[in-house]
Figure 1: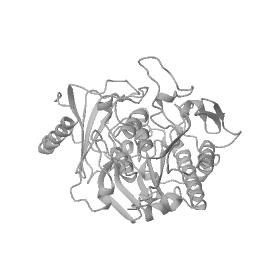
Figure 2: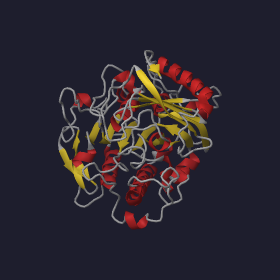
Figure 3: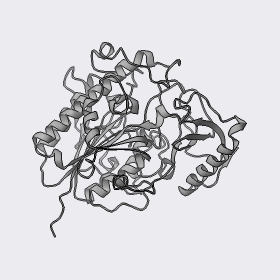
Figure 4: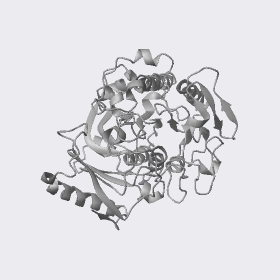
Length: 445
């Protein structure tokens, strides 16, 4: 029996990108024409979510297929564990050339004082991406919008060309890899961009030159209407970042079409979390709110070119099993998600809620259903980061939103006695989800 040719897999990963910044999710500005086109051909998930709305933890969950509390990656500055199956290793074992380009954020160990923010990531901390590596632990500290550097597989520094935008440079290097690689095996390229994350060194979203003028006529997202935060001055540059990412997505797609590889390539487009522009706390994420946890997720390619849209609740943990199934690899039992191919194939027993963990701005657990969002917190700091532990023994009910009637989460019903029965039901469902992943010793007040 002839072996089925395995598809290439391109993981196009952005950082801090709101789902509603994309045209295929309703954005009226011309931000994502290339993504919109492949969304029509492929599969679009309307209700996709992160499981941890902060950079390092979300990335660790994606590379392991497990919740942050299970692997100890509940904050930034925690290295990726080596005692659990890792996506890079599993894809390598499945016969793929594994390549990683861009932001990593999974090597620094804050407890041991091993700091790689501006240093090369050691080979043993690269999560199994063994064939090609061109990355920076914290790209926001080794670069700005128009200058910077990454490190290659041999720890050599590679500088950006002068006055060239960061997204363009990273895409140049990705296309260079695709053009020069040997084609004996299929590739698994994890292309991890910093944009549209803010530039930490300036606390500003750095879009390409001209973004402020090009995207000044934006429609205010519903959750931001009437709020403070910094969205008024930052959204044009934010949308500029999003458009640059889309332009460069188009460049990669065109290269694959020119080389005849596009038809046998699965493209996954998603992000680690969103941004609420300092409206829910004094930074950009780390909350249970939709702007923080609701993310874009689109898959295109063999097995997914069905032109379907799903409203089912999915999350980042569903992507590792999806990719492994596409690679004809065994899915480890410890992984928590389900292959999204099941939905494409008509699964009728899909979940009706998701679990989101939060940390750094207070330890929290959130249950999100089609209609309700219920969140418990051990503490909640409206300031910046408080670096709490990953779990708690005692939680307090903090948020209850009726998403059907209050999609922008303006009316917190947690203290409304008319919703006591709703809270009790959601509490039990949340406790069940927590117990399923080993969080059984806690109390909710």
